[in-house]
Amino acid sequence: MSSVLEHRRDYLRLMRQFTIDKGFFTVNDIHHAAGIPRSTAQDWVYRLQNEGCVLLKEEKRGRNAARYAAISAMPASTCRRIFTTVDGDQVAIYHECMSSACAAFCGYHHALAGGILYHVERDGTLLMETAFLGEREIAVGLAPLSAVGVCSVERQGDAIIQTIRCIGGPAYSLSGMMARAEGVLRVEPRHIDHIVEGKVWTSACMQVIIGVDDTDTRDGGATFALALALLNHLSGIKGIIPISHHVVMLNPDIFRKTAGNSASYIEIAILPERFFDLAGQVRRFVSDESFSVEWGIAIRAGFRPFKGLQEYGRLVREQVITRAVAEATAEQFGIMLIGGNGVIGALGAVALAGIPYEIQLDPAKNDFPELC
Image 1 (cartoon, rainbow, N blue to C red):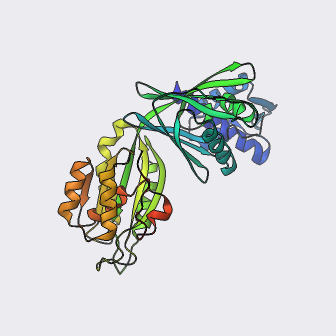
Image 2: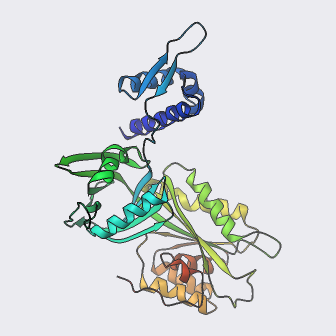
Image 3: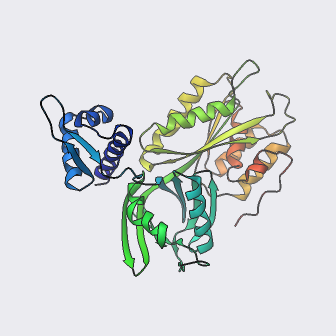
């Protein structure tokens, strides 16, 4: 059922874009743009016409194909992606919007409502929230109350279900837009007077943090660029959703450094059944693209911070760490290391994940926030 909804969303988006660009579309336009058989394109046009999403502008005349138009040029959804990752009893919720203003609005009101969320953060158009599984009552309404909040997060099998309560514009988004966002399996809204409460279903993905270091030499290369390329590469694999790319500064006094001694890490969401092949895919990409033979990779499943792991991140910025120490730390926290001596810095990047940017980029700032 979810694949049918995804196809519906994709084809309707194409039809709307053609309508905006030239005022109409034909079956052949959808056939070529979507790369699907003409008969399939025709079936979808008829289906969406019956649903009232598409209208016939001009009948077929001779060799001139019938022309159709999507009824509304308004974006089908301002929500681009909504997906969730799970680590034990904690869930990370990611909501990417078309607009940073929309992300800021939801972030502000979600934090104001409180509810089951214990951390809310925005990076541009991406809203990142963390919650424990469970429920907590919230009040929504007109100011000074929050307009929208998350009152429960639960897991059912391979799915995460958020219960969102809202009014006004957020209610319109919940009932009419969120179901069209990539990553959403379904939305079940219900109206209670002027309040809308809805259950948003998403897959229970794993969150994976991948650290990379020592991929460059004085003759060429840049670890930050390779890490970003790796993120782009992985995002093209079915079952993987890109989250973020980060640069962290390590010990600036290491004599073997090529510049300021930075490492990188990326974060992805991945369906559990895809995790088995991930290490091989990452290894092949980094080994092929690295300028240095000492490249190193660290792969960690999960996002919860650990004090002992953060302590390694602190030490790798202050001392010269041996590979034996890195391997012992990785074994303690279930982190996979691959490659040469670059694994020392790659593990340092993973250890510093979740620390504020201003601390990640300044090795003199090692006053990490207290863990909950």
